[in-house]
Image (tube, one colour):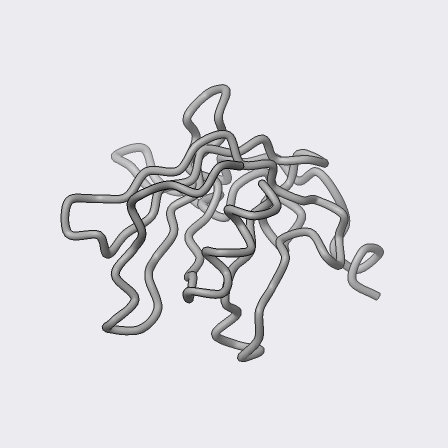
Length: 126
């Protein structure tokens, strides 16, 4: 990908990155980027994040093979939130094996599971 002229404002630390499916707009996940993750994402065209739990740079799909191919990047008006439009390889963005991390739904009819399980995480993350 060509380097954009705009960049997120990392002066306050990590920046949230909302990830949407490029084809249907479904929100797949929320992660965080630091400046290194941003640069690797732009350089490679694949999503990289900062793992807060592991305290390290994380190439999405490095364990599962379910990488995210970036189609476009948007930054909000305050330059403190990133929106990625991606193709989710393997069909699952969530470590639970589901298409979306937002797989639990509540509305006036009650609670439901609204995102299919694509893989068994116990088999993938041995």
